[in-house]
Length: 313
Image (tube, rainbow, N blue to C red; front, side):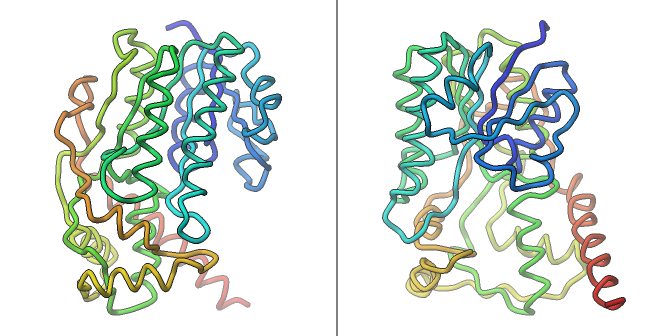
């Protein structure tokens, strides 16, 4: 296909790093807008990737970033906010989407690919409600949009298996709220492939794609898979909902909270799909077992290097 000039918001996040690298390999001209060059990735991007520093909420900054672009991709998303008011989710998901849509309209950028979430607009959590509101903004935009709704996404550097690997290293017992909630984890490479195919296929305009993997696991299953892969003997302690809610309340105001009241509300809804977007795009889903050794092997290697460094100190 003809190389495209693409602006990516959220390009330095977990999915963004994978997608931006793939787009660059495909020969596209990729521009990433970042609020600050806080990571090595942002200071030293992949070849063919331009990183601009600026506030994406500022219309003038968005206008400049979109100048000369053919496509905008919005990957921005948060899983937690300070406190539990919902304002952080509204700002990150809804307000920013409105700003981007308006900027696309001003710049004449017709094509918009929007990251959302499975169950967007359902349930009681601020996270899911705000994802649904953002989708409504996109659908009413008049742009040539495509929306992606993934279940939890796994891969190198994820916030799922890699996150639990860190927690499992600290304690022999893992108290787990909503341990029976079901997920269909989708591989980050499959998510990236979905975005790439949407850019190639005009038929994806105006479509929403649920992205989920071929297997369904409970949250407890995912923790146990992680422990088994790392060779750790750990016990998962499912918490009653009353205790799970209390756990969220106690962690709501921690600076780097591992769990929150809104996480608890999101877990009240199973993250499994019903209309296979990967199949619709011709993508064979990747099983967790095929990738997990490499994902957690990298985590283990990094931990070994840190331990060795501490010993030398």
